[in-house]
Image (cartoon, rainbow, N blue to C red):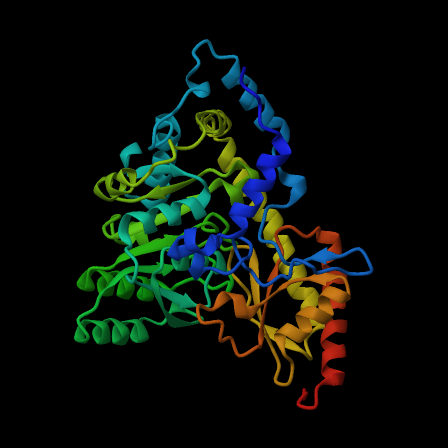
Length: 430
């Protein structure tokens, strides 16, 4: 007769055995290269709190009142009521073909370059798209060139792939292509090359700027001459608040050498976690080779196709542009009214963000902390620089999620925080 061992004895033995081991010995070099933090590390402490109900200018996500709940539910019902069951089976690594074809139709229409479904790969949001691109084209120690500032989440992804990140500055026209040219020449002279150039050419996160057409042309030529692929993070490209949106990098290049990543997260709802890679089929094929997680949800892909196939996505985006344009203008007006002694900014032509520069004597982290305590959340600039060497003068203000009625009060609270820091600063001057 077999005697069953006492469970508590086994647990005690396992605990003693595992106590002798260090998890760092099992961890990958990538994990050791990353500190603990959120997926974005966007400059908002996890323990932030306020004694009053907070207003957030922190998150670049859709307005909660615009989430198309009813229409998505109806689309999901149509998918589940279909006679065939493909939505409830594995869908493969490239994604639902009708949804990819629908994206291709929109890109052909809007970017004036004929493409089909083979130019698209569906991913786990744009963050998943960037991760897949890195897996396909980066080895540890490879060089990625990124703008300074840039999206903190992508910096985290590059670090996770153990890339060497080199920053190039920006101005009101976007990436400084003169500085990029000098950098690429220096790398060549040293026997090195950049594998990827990461840019947010449309409605930059966090800077709010858009790259000029001349800079786009210069970037494309520089990248091609030096054999570097361009990742154009186009999560906000649909949100232009002018009648003359810039010609995209993929259109100018006829897709050559440009990997565009985008997502339904910003144009519909972040919880969808469906994005895409748009690139030449030869590049798509190389990304598919490195994909091991069985692809995304066919159920969500088919639901999204049902939602957008009759033009509803276009209608939704038009409505969002109008709302976010109003929010941008309301924030600008409120900042002029309350915050003008303390900060300056340029009016963004699109997107979700306004990049504020604090006046001399004010420190962004101190203002951020005071603002948090005063009931308004925002992100400070340090997290958006690869080497975290922001001079301490920037705040990123996001206007997409905040209710329109709360924007003036948010600006008033931010001004109060600036005033508080100014009183405590010996170097403050108007």
